[in-house]
Amino acid sequence: MATIINCSDLAFSYNETSVLRGINLSIVPGKMLGILGANGAGKSTLLKILCGVLKPKSGEALFKDKELSKMDRREIAKGIAYIPQDPMFAFPFTVNEVVLMGRAPYIGSFEFEREKDREIAKRAMETVGIFHLKDRLISEVSAGERQLSSIARGLVQEPEIMILDEPATYLDVKHRTEIMNILRELKEERGLSIIAATHDIFSSLFYFDEIMILKDGSILAEGKSDEVINSEILSSAYGIQVTVKKENGRVFVFPNQ
Amino acid sequence: MKQIEFGLFNMSTNRKFLISTVLLFVLWIIVALIAIFTGTYSIGPFEAFEAFSNSDELSKTIFFKIRIPRVLMATIAGGTLAITGAALQALFRNPLASPFTLGISGGASLGALLALKSGLAVGFLGFSMVSISAFIFSLLTMLFVYSVSKVRGGVVATGRLLLAGVVANFLYSAVIMFIQFFSTFTESLQTMRWVMGSLDIVGFDTVWKTLIFVIPGCLILLSLTKDMNLFGLGDDVALSLGVNVKRMEKKIYFATSLAAGAVISVTGPIGFVGLIIPHILRMVLGVDNRIILPCSFLLGATFLTAADTVSRTIISPVEIPVGIITASIGGIFFLWLLIKTKKEIIV
Image 1 (cartoon, rainbow over the protein chains, first blue to last red):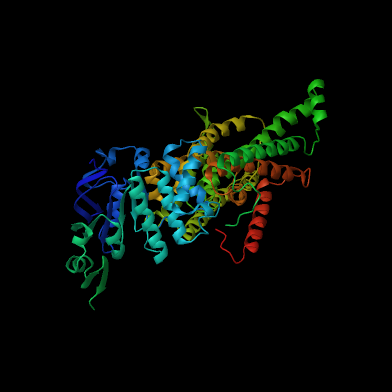
Image 2: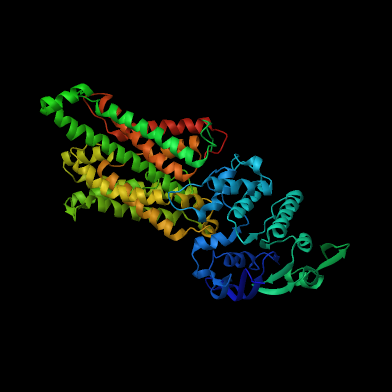
């Protein structure tokens, strides 16, 4: 099957500090890839390269066989949606306005959204279950609802892949589960590819088809979640001795101290 | 920020745009007409028509050399200050940014004054050197304030922003006072009046010379309104949605300096318009820059035209500088806003 994103031997550094090196990654339609790793392991940087926000210092990052750094930004925006960890909302737009901004790559300067765009936004809000909040200010809804608004904004871009940076980190267990379920539905029903960075080892097993674990900017382990989530690898990834126990398809991770 | 419900708030963007711009345009026409027919020397619509047919030279001169140019200048100045204020607020992601608070008006004033004093008040390829000098000083001030107030991760720190603006304004006014100190009494008085902000112009010449800068500046800003919205979601999201963030920032610097510099070089620093007008509009219309920027131009134009009419007539025949009127109205408005939202965060 054709790959959506394919990168080989990626490297990145901020000033002189190397953040990523030797990263190879590819994802096909309808798959969900989870990226795990300690804080500062390079997850966010990798995601920003994959959605074209950052240019790699060396190596190739391809979106459907085209090099991302040479593509038009609006073209990228029609194929890749990026949901950051803690999105900024400098002005109190309504939820509806935020979601509609996902149509930006389809709209020119001096133009407004058309009926069709509003319809797409409405469906996206219904999909993630926030249509009733559409006229509320983004500054007034809860953190979970804000994250859902961002996901709806991403959907409205009609992308082939959605890249999320810790989509559920700040959320309670209910919203976290809700968001992961929505992502899985999108993957299964629409064939959307998903790459998400996460600290949530528990949900990794359920939701992700594949897991990549980063450590100090390189790949420590990758593969099916059963294969890579074990005591040895996680202890190395997070620099703390942990025990991983699996029972009835569930996984328990706890530190040894 | 608090919203005032007028039923306009949740309308679809294009309808909201249409209704608000048409309403504000009509409001501007009404105020401009009142302004043209009001003044120390009273000329009613009927007398104006009569002056035409009877060729009453005095009325004609007042009407075409003074009233109409002045109303046009108030329109251009008020509109430009308000639209550049709104654009700067989007660029700094901060509702307290404006040509006045960022020290840009101080910079433009000094730039214009220096050009005047060094005898550069000549045209250069049809452009006024005074406006060009004001533009350069505005641009430098903006770059200074931006570089000082931008902290890690591209976030603008409000405290640093306002402090940098205040410092820039103080430095500029020190230099302006220094120049004044060595001027003759008459020159000094002229500068004084101009620094207070005044729309005292004669003839259409100044109007055209300002428009050369203002029209391209405002058009550039209007072409960026959609990108400004996306920019409000952070650099990374804006980039991922197709905005060339670096280029957008440069265009906003250039366009605001161009338009605001040209206006301030003529009128002097007229405060508060760039701050209050976008603020009021956001309370009523929401924060979409595609609506806020054009409406800011219209409401700013209307507001300054009205304020200028008051300044010409309130203690007629004496004219008080319009800057005093806008600063008093602006100051009182902000105090009211502060008191009303005592326990809330206003920005």
